[in-house]
Image (cartoon, rainbow over all chains, first blue to last red):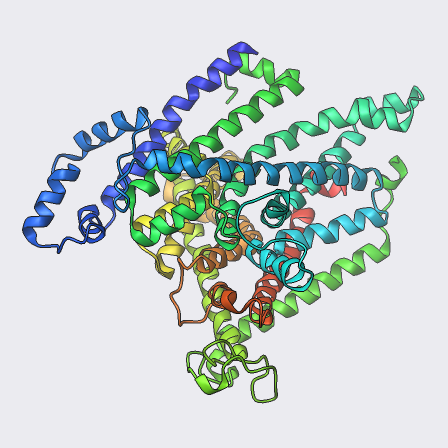
Length: 316
Length: 285
């Protein structure tokens, strides 16, 4: 188990290296000149002279490799430079907004898990009955609903018509309900169907048949023989859902005026504030990668076979 | 439990499936017609501003009313179909081309080429897709072209991986080996014996994904990163309606309903197709 964790941690190094190279190259090879936006945001008229000075200031006149090494060396120390707009450390600003985003994302994940797994199990156990059909219909609706539209529908219903929930800002529990639900619906539905599918697969496994023959009660079969095994793919998929939720949170933050990193990112995009964008994507990818690492470890905890695979090395 | 598995699904189940297929086919047909014949169908110019008729209610003159600039909602919806569907189909084709090229090179060549390509794919799959798309648009600039580019760049790796394993599988089939043994060149063997199989599978895959891509496109447009106003697009229309949400909520509800219906119409046949194609899932059903 420890070996597996160490191995996965070591794999993070080449992965994050690749990520940083992509992030760096995309910006440097894009047709946009960072010096230009730097000048524009500083309200300096972009003359030839000013551009040259700005390029020297930003280090853009040096060879690409030197620029990358310089940038990466700072990035490792979590220094992503200063924002072109506010002139303060990008990292510090994003860290200021990050807790709000993490709060929204964790509530979303919590809603996803709290509803998808029980409903998935119920649908599998009552296969072909009304509840299963309902879950299928709900899943169709859920994966086809644009989250921003759902957000508006909820605002119209709960804020405008009924006046139950606040439509924007950050505050008590009531503020997080609508943003989190709008983001959660899609992952919830996907996860519910996945849980159902995995449960059904396990329900037809031989060890379950054997348990039935031994006369074990249905409840104990579900709890003891089916649930744990069928949770393995579900836990693996959780990592993927974190990516979806982080992306969905950006949209929800914009609609609900939620002071998180996503909203900050959108304003950075309209300002062409490149250091903010770089820091944002690396931060989000970092969170995503770490969550995937955690789900891998959880899988190994659930499934002894995964632990073995880790020790034998990758089986490709 | 086991007898349920063995017996065929109830007859009613099949008819509800057929109904779903027929309905989504109809919706897709109507949407494609709307996109193709937008200038003929739309009663007004979708960008014509008429400040005297601001926020007009639904009436025979304006079937779905008008927005905050007096533009006819029905016309904007019809034209929006063209923008949204056009973007989605373009994305699907581009992803298929890039994914197919990269994936089949990787699968057919094997060896070191394969390793390098697969590492790059894995690298791209490390990013959360929507976040990477946001970053790419931020760097490249806003606009529909860049939205399309960003979605293609964030999705090709998945397709390349699937095509690679498909090609690797097909490569070792006996009929392909026989063609090789008979003296067929690499290119000829690939084009005649692997390409047709792989491309049909790929088309199915891309069809399954159309709904998902539409959600991405309209989401990014909604954030104001895609098509720039005043050009009508469903996501943009919802964004336009944000200021009127207290007084005229239908301005946001209707375009959203269009997106929802379209995605649903793409998803239902996709889901049924997936069940049919994957025997392991069909078994569990």
